[in-house]
Figure: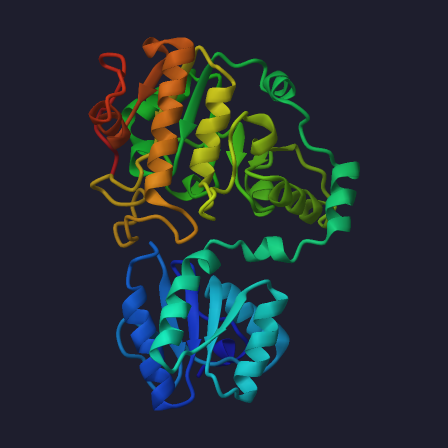
Length: 372
């Protein structure tokens, strides 16, 4: 094991993950049974194991030293959502459990009998939909953030901050965000809404007036954009993190600005930032709304531009059917309030909407050649 691995600097996981720890062959067998059952049922999810062996679909990971900082760094590098430890604890698993709990992660134990396997699998969807960062937020930090750096108070205030835009371009992270028609639309749009920051590396369009995200890093990467987070807890956590870095930010809460939008469904599934973006854009009632890059993970080129190796699927926190239903409802709402001529949809979502009976205006796809 290398020195950097010993101190928790493991290779960055491509997806959110579950980290199994095994001490015996029986532990490995239990982890393998669970991993096989999990498969791809929960979307993009990496499955790691630290133990005597790593049968497929598990991937072997070295064990860092038992220092809290090293273990917390390893959990961050693996983008863990849960750790699964042997029923008979070891010194390493005890230390890892403490580090995981400090980060708000779920700590589970390897089952040994059939009923325990069934219970484990039934709990998993809920656990994977929890945002561990939200579990570590202190109420007093929310109160301080709200007082010192209050969010944008209303939809009217957001409209004013954006100079009352008539044409809004919504760009998700899918391959159609780089479509030639989207690039052309960016030249004339009054404001551009974007999701997170992937486009800083892969996008042909380099502008963003509003960014939808739940992490403070976006305020540094896109400093001139307004940051909108889906819910109150996330928004104040971001504002508090910015204050700790000596900055006040322009930010808002989508649940408070977009009537009817809820960041979490009754099932526990969390809405994506793309869903929040569409809800907010439609709530602004623009004269013209252009949408690209909301491909619902159905684009033939893959999940994102230039990354064919990434699974074309949602992260475990989200639900494919829920996202599809919400997206189509937003398209219909825009047409109802402003007419079919007000909406242009670029990418696979155009055909999905047509097949679902939404009367998009003729020629509304605007498709042209998609950039590689």
